[in-house]
Image (tube, rainbow, N blue to C red; front, side):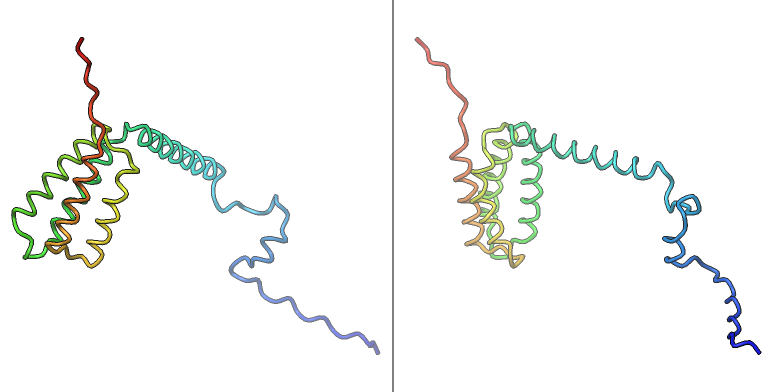
Length: 161
C-alpha cells in the first residue's frame, strides 16, 4: 500500500486570462493592450496642446492677447445682462454697457494690464454670486469698470516745438 495521496484533477481552463497569469507570463506571450503607436500619438498631441497653451499665455502677457480678453469680457457682459433684476433701470444698464464697451476697446488696444482688472473681476464675482444683480450692484460694477478705464494708458502725444 502506498501512503501517497492522489493528486487533485486539473481544473477546467477559465474563459478569460487572470491578472496573475498575465503578469507571470513571459513578455513574448503577452499581447499589448494598445498598438505601439498609441503612446507616441497621444504624447505628441499632448505636447502640441501644451505648446499652444504656452504660446497663448505668452501672447496674452505681452498685450497681444487683448482681443481674447475683450471677447471674454463681452461674454461676461452678456451674462451680467441676464442677471439684472427688474429694478435695474435702462439708464443704469446703458451706463454699464458704455463702460464695458470702453473697457473692451481698451483691452483690444492693449491699454489695460491684467493687474488693473482684478478689482473689476472681484466686483463681478461679488455681484453675481447669487445670480441676481441689483441696481446697487450695477452701480458698483459700472464704477469698477470706470476705474479700470480711467487707469488705461493713454496714447503718447508728440510734443510740438
